[in-house]
Length: 595
Image (cartoon, rainbow, N blue to C red; front, side):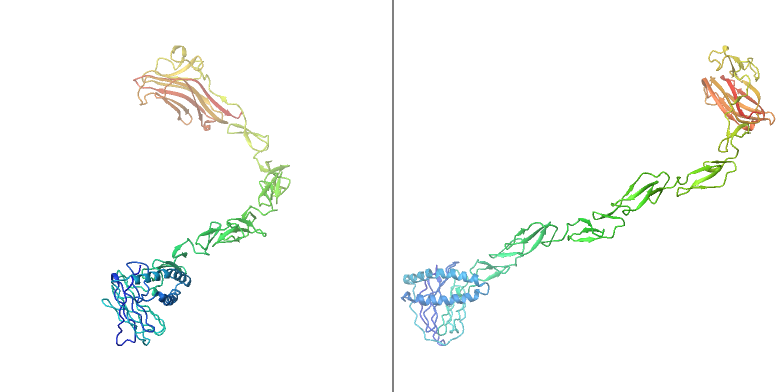
């Protein structure tokens, strides 16, 4: 609420041309109303209470009828016009709204002012005396702290008065020129500085937008610019998540930013969404073959890109196949035809030759045959080609052989026959066993023995209890006593045409030796008397004990063919523990051509 000021005396400076007097101090330290000036002189302004938002308005002289209200309204209208000019610098529409709110309060303020003037008693000053008209001057400046400022000279036109001074002091209003209504300055009760209603740009705390920049009205009624909004400014605040009209894509769905700064989804694109717009003619990653058979792939922008021509077939946008459709081929003698998909379709194998995907020829290439002892070879085209007649035999389509078929011969004691391919083959003539009395059953017949024992080497098995003859009823017993030196042999003539000589017999060994060292042995040998050559065929010892009969067989060299040789067994033992060597069923089998 605004306090009413007391009327001050009108004391003009001697060098001023009729300015209005300064108002005396009102209640609570507020500025009193100024005295009315001369022609064109302005009245002093009223003060504001502590931190209030109500603006003071011009005071009146004591006792003056409230008919001055109409003149005051004109003065306020002039101030409003000045305010409008300032506010249009920001936004004309917002400023007109602010003036509308101020205009609504004017009647109430004026009514309060009239009542306050009549109610002032002790603090009211004496009315000021009107000054004389002065010449138009410049706008009066504000007074400094401590004393009331002097009236300024009248300003030209409707120039506003200076702003209020510092704490508890009021600046004087500048005197207006003829027709001027410059308002006087005013102060705040709490000493916070003066604010003239005519000089305010905005209401403190008010918010608005200038384009995309938020504006906030500070305590002095000045607009303060904020940081420009990245999207939308609405009612002085940044809102929204996007700039209206902006576009983008979320997957394949286009989005457009509405006037509220919010994304709005449009129907999904059929092919590609790029920068908020549907585009393309194909689905990215899709493949196809062009009308010319070229592979095509859809790129990320939904456009077909054509690749290199396929060597064989384009199928579903990919080069494939292993052949060109309609081609013929042969595989493993089977005809093949290339299908539309570029794959070989294999038919039944040809009987003879597959050539260029078809069966042909009268023989299988590479095969051979004989025709009247003439070799023939099948060519790669499946035709027989004859060679030179063979001297002996034509077999398997080739000349071969080394003999006339069905002829015979004796080769190194082996009877041979020439087969149908002209090759010599050994006959199946059975072998001949050349030893006499091979099982010792005839006693000493054909065998010669030498021993230092009192017993003979060829012995009836009836005298033995641990073993019996392999072929009853005799056997050869070598060793069996200390320091034995036994020898049993037979001379036999090997046929000159012998092709195979095999010596075989059965043996058994029993010993009392318990050392790994060999003490007792039995050698099997051949002896060539003509060359005086002794050859060991096999050796047995006391570490080779066998409680049962064991067969032994060895091939003798065919170099013995045509010779008389001695086949023998020779055993020696030490004087410690006995070792018995038994032999039975000796055979010398020879395969040889007949004489």
